[in-house]
Length: 316
Image 1 (tube, rainbow, N blue to C red):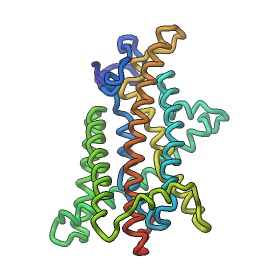
Image 2 (tube, rainbow, N blue to C red):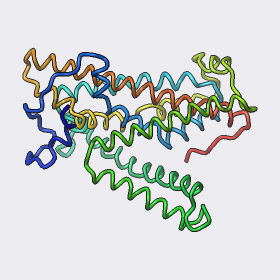
Image 3 (cartoon, helix red, strand yellow):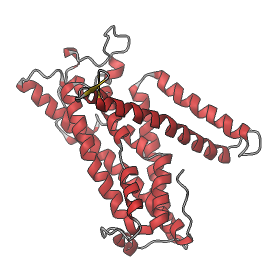
């Protein structure tokens, strides 16, 4: 198997690191087992979904309305994955990433497509939200392994912020797709298994849940006064615009577009493209299954443990 796209072009003199090269073309796998060997971009997307933000969001929403909106977790994630697949299909067919496509959408504002400006605003929001995620993670690490004695001191929390930022920078500096994929896959598996285990572990406590609770949560109902919560859940659970946009980068980095080759309209290209798009679809659906199970688990924990106690974490 050839190196992922980003690594295969390391040291290349090409101005465009994603320029399609005929030498990268290869036939897609035809068996399910073979396709599983080429998965990966979806797990990176899952790592962005099944993170501290999703843990807090899904748990807080479950705490606020109980099992009432469990069905919306499934609906929200299921609807959005179709957009993810269509953008992935476009990216493989063109060899371009989503932001390039956004920039081509008329009308132009200042020589840039109007959607490109929206993406810029989106990434500014990401910058602030990721700062919050790192701070929250630093609090968690400091509580578990305080530096300097007091876990909530400026020294301990500040030190953990610096450590986490250094780790993130180090991962980026490696400039290797496989590093990101392996780390993301490992973290997603660990967090997902932990959440599911906890859901069943509380069965031996006063916070146990029943099959009836789950079935009630699957009745496609919205109580009076909970519409705002339902709207928030739809927007905050599953993949968002940022994750869907980033997914096209990971598909290109993995090599799906390069392995398909440039679209020359030939039967050979269409056959290869359909094959790699099929792999991408499997990748997206496997990721969907993983982050849906994890999100549902966090929601159930909030509904079963926090809701009966009237404890609703503040999402600020």
